[in-house]
Amino acid sequence: MLAKCPVCLRKTIHPLLTVALLLSTAACSNNTNTTTGFWEEMRADVAVNNGPSRTGKQVYDYRCKSCHARNTQGAPMPGDEYEWRQRVQKGMDVLMEHTINGYQRTLMPARGGCLDCNDTELRNAVLYMLSKSGIELNNQD
Ligand code: HEC
Image 1 (cartoon, rainbow, N blue to C red):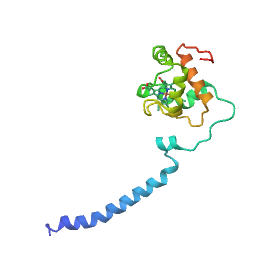
Image 2: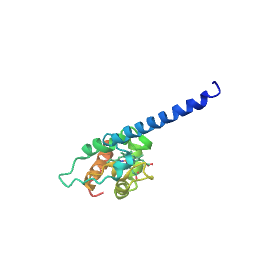
Image 3: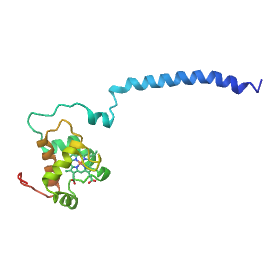
């Protein structure tokens, strides 16, 4: 009797586990509307804003803040004059190239993760972070 037990246990537990597994995957697949992965979001086909451009602060609060307000992965914080002075020395063209295409693999994601932002809005956001750091560029820079 005792010797048989592990076998019969396995026989009853196995189908139960299979059912539990099926139930849990079914539960997960119902969740697609509530959870969007980062990469899914990055690849999404999003219409770019072609209406009036949002200000630098609006764009910053909307997308950039999530990393730049707390130095995530080394994202330079607005107000950190030393950091931004180092970066702005590369020239605004390079900063914009890095903003648009991404930088350091994807630590700084393409378009700062703002897929609906147009280039003017991205530029506004960069100028906003620079100005918060005491760096004022005129629009020709
Ligand atoms: C997922 C996090 C994340 C988000 C969101 C993000 N950034 Fe960044 N950003 C970074 C990191 C990390 C760096 C620093 C990369 C490095 O120098 O190693 C960076 C660097 C930069 C730089 C400096 C690039 C250079 O050449 O030195 C600019 C400009 C910038 N980000 C603009 C933006 C703008 C504008 C937004 C919003 C539209 C934004 N970022 C959103 C993480 C982010």
